[in-house]
Length: 110
View 1 (spheres, helix red, strand yellow):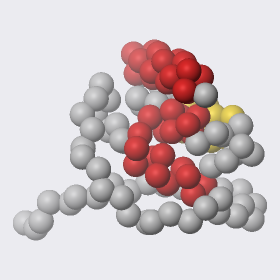
View 2 (cartoon, helix red, strand yellow):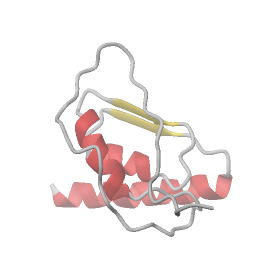
View 3 (cartoon, helix red, strand yellow):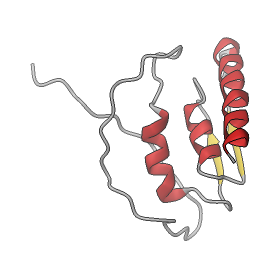
């Protein structure tokens, strides 16, 4: 009974008077990502917004990590610490493997 929703929303929280690291657009287009997790967010989209919020002083928590794309984006953005929590052991294992592979890629690129 209406148009198809073509956007995703996210919950974002910070503690204290944390300043924006660098301004970025509040909109980014990206194709839907169909990975191992049914609600996987594209890492490129998360990376876009994390550039605004994450630096070497940041600690990032993803309490519903799923595929781990937010944790990989946090690592790419240079977060000091990052932690993803996932209740499903299969998703957690796959996210851990993907993060380890991603960290190796980052290490080889530098």
